[in-house]
Image (cartoon, rainbow, N blue to C red; front, side, top):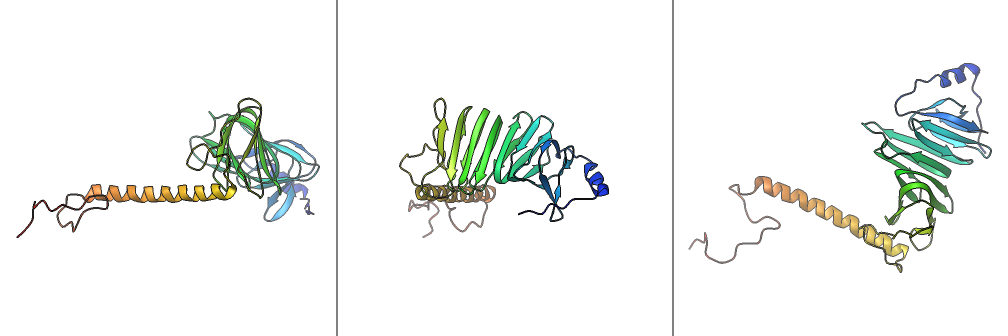
Length: 258
């Protein structure tokens, strides 16, 4: 299905000697066929090569690769396609975009300001942990092996924080929110407003609630900006009337002209 374009010896030497930047990853372990997208062409990725920011990596059926940066590790399973985006700063801001397949992540919260895996269905945010995200046509799931992971349904904004031995999944269609399973006391699902989720809520209900929460947030932000403007210009002469939250003057006669 995919054409593997084999580079010449000189080209391979050039790729393997790319200067590593602070946010670049290295192919530490590699097995089978692993490809990287360069200038819209699939080229082989070899062990020891540097993977620049935002480069698309794809493993075929026999392939898998472990990408390493410091003490952070991303294990890319067979039949998987990803991109890793990093933002500069005192601590790297890292997002793994998983198109499909299986990705395992190991990262310490002390070393990252933010580390997340995003799929078409859900997003998993690191809180110092080791976990695996699997995504495909039927949906996506997250399994936690160490630490904690915040999992969010991208369509309904429902979310839950998982612990060791717990997992969350969401389907590509149908009603319902995230499904949580595993060992220990299972965490409570929260809606877009951070409130415990009603067990009888359908996906349509959750989408409507998420929309209302976003609209309420916009109104609150608008009111806050207006209040700031009023506070800056309040009390100045030439005001034609009361502010949006200031009640109109009653007929007490104060300042009333005959």
